[in-house]
Length: 451
Image (cartoon, rainbow, N blue to C red):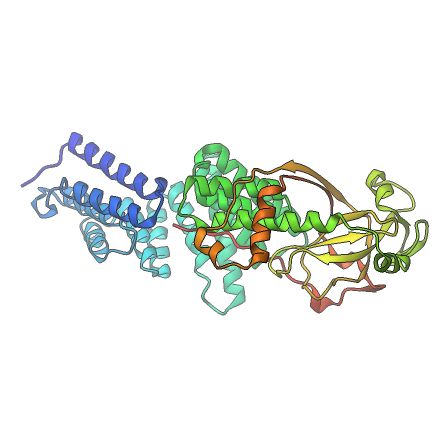
């Protein structure tokens, strides 16, 4: 019979941890290459683990089944053999919290989410202040939302958020816990929107930054999600940098490369439309806008129309408060799941970018006049490297117009513009009327786990 000594136990744990780092932290140019490397390493480590049936005690037998299960679970896909070994480990020692955690991971890959959640909760019952168990409960609770009961979905998301907060409170320097908290904050915002979604978005962004500052900076998933947040906040410079970092960390992450290209094309289209030339048609469009100094009533409050130039230097305490009268010249983005971006112009032919949150594409259209009370601006002036190109096979199938787009991507580097941000679209007027309630949308944004 085999009796496991301390040195053997430590050596096996070290080999398993190295294998798990290979699975979780190491990225290859292709998934095929990573799968092959994982499989060969799994076989190598598995050969070092003695037969559990030769163990002298039940405790040793449970550990050896655990180690075998952990190794087999490093496969990219679900392993029935891993599940069997982990189940045997728990049969020999039901108090082995590591085995409950490992079985939870295995069942997660099997997509048995309810069973996985029960495993993580069992581990948490054994060690109530285990930050890893709290993290895993939070992660799975976000995903156990297949029920059609909206109230149950809301309870799941809220419980996930609470568990993530507990994990962070146990170790404020644990980047993995901050990362899970950031994802939970977004799930909470989308599932249970509050009266101030912008504050929740900023809290989630800060949580990503905390995760990055505490060891998760090399996580491509984090970089991708953080960039998605920055894109939602219309910070295209930070978004582009984040997607670039995600792609550099994991070259197989083609979604990041596509996002880089999308941002560049959108910025170039925006720059082209901002450089509007005066024409008779434009003159006619702008003549009907309200002149500076005109009084406008919005929600029973009196505002004075200002030019964009004056609004850029106006203070928030200015009396009476100001508003802008703008003509929508172009819609830049056309997706309902992100803020809508427009190029707009005032009567003095000063153009700017207008970003409006939580409205449908039919709420504000090209040619509309919009009144924006208490305008708030962000000024952008940045350079982007011209290193994002389409794959060769995609380029071959594109039209000459698409080739022109590709040329534009590599030729424009500097972007300078004012962005007028509207977080609360209920306050704006479109063609003299408030936007109908059915044209408002709840916040929509998706953070992703690719592994």
